[in-house]
Image 1 (cartoon, rainbow, N blue to C red):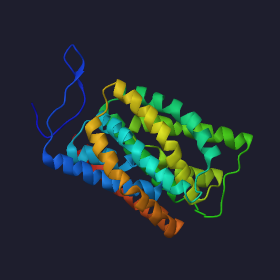
Image 2 (cartoon, rainbow, N blue to C red):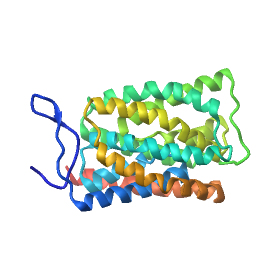
Image 3 (cartoon, helix red, strand yellow):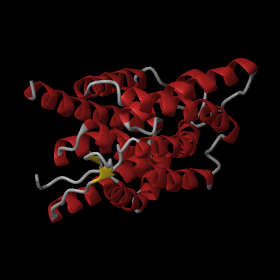
Image 4 (cartoon, one colour):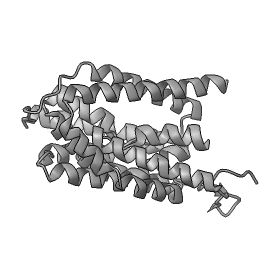
Length: 275
């Protein structure tokens, strides 16, 4: 039996989930991943999966599907803490959030079904392509602290569609969807950068929760790893939200873009070396 890995998978005709032993170093890495993901979640209004998925792939060599499912489960508690931090300062648009959720909970189930039908390498390349699109989008956004979301029939329908697309990406790639919601709320719907982040985290909670339920049924979740990452993340999420409130919106966008470029480069190198 291989060492150094632990995941929930199917074994034999009984379909039981069989754990594999994990070294002490792996537990340490899980805590480190959680601390970093929690801070980024609060700082950028994302679920943290944008860091968790590549970290689990690069540092712990988990399968792409297990990494995506585990990431989505870990996102739930950290997004809740981050959302509360933004809500306390009035930086959550609850109506826009509900419209986004209406689409995202459906989209998450679609993404999960696609996850079990698309080859591992295809999912990885899709994740990298997704990162590049987000990076390009960040440079089209002009953040503002004074903007707000005006809810009309057209914008309401647009928010539901955005939620649907975000949900698909969430279930397929194991991300909370904040890296899509935040820039598009600012660019297309006129939200301020802080309201976009707070609303994004509010939407991520049910999206990730429903996605996790679907992943668990398919054996795509490492629950112990998700618990460690999620608990560790909760200790740093509020700090990230506090930093977001004091730095300029432009600086926040630049830092986010740099981070995404680093993640995309790392994953691309790994995929090319595996050929």
